[in-house]
Amino acid sequence: MTIAPELPGALELIERCRRRGVTVSLGHSAASAEEAERGFDAGATSVTHLYNAMESLSARSPGLAGTALARAGVTVQLIADGLHVADDMMRLAFAAAPGRCVIVTDAIAAAASDKSVVQLGDVTVYVNDDVAQRDDGTLAGSIGKLRDNLARLSTLGLAQADALGAVISSPARFLGGQQHVAMTPGSPANLFVVNDDLVMNRRVTSHDIVDF
Image (cartoon, rainbow, N blue to C red; front, top):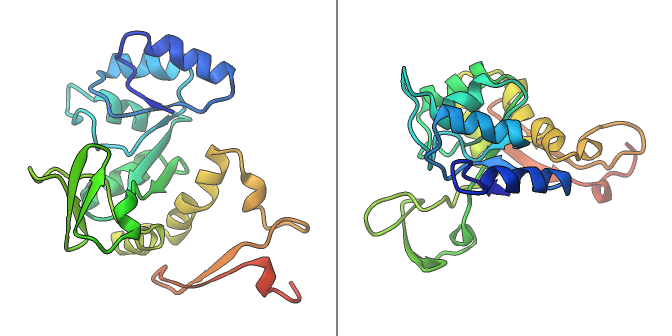
C-alpha cells in the first residue's frame, strides 16, 4: 500500500497494515522530512517512485525524497524511463542508497495498447512519442517496459551489478521473494539474457532448459 504519511490517521493505518503483514510505502505525498520520519517509524519500509508526486528536496527541506535516501533500510523505487527522473538525480539515488534502489515502470494500461487516447480512471490520457500525459502536459504514469528501463540504466555509468540488482535481487528481497532469484539447486530457473549494454536478447524459463 502507498500512503501519504501526513494525512489524518495515516500513522495508525501504517501500523495496522504492518501488523497484518501488508508492506507500506510512502508516496503521492507532500510530507515534510519530519512527517516522513514518523511514517517510517510507524512501519513504512519504502517510498513510491522517488522524486515523483512528492515535494522537491532542497538544502533546508529534504522532504520525503531526502529522508528516504538518508534513512538506512528504506527501499527507494525509481522510474528509469528518462522522463520521470533526470539522469543526475538517478545517479544520486544509486550513490546515496546502494542496494536499496528498485526500478519500477509505473506503467498504465496504455502500455499494452496502441491507442493514442486512453482512460486512466476518470482522467483522459494522451500518448504521443511514447509519453503519456494529461491534457495539461502533466505526466500520467508511463508506457515503458522494465527491460527498456534496465537498458537505459547502462547509459548512466552505473555498475552493471547495481543496475541488474535494482531489477532482480533488490525487488525480490523487498517483496520477500528471494527464492525466485536465488540461483541455487532446486530453485526456479527463470533467466533472461542481456548483452554488454544490458539489452535483453531473450528470456529463458525452466521449460527451455534441458540440462541445467
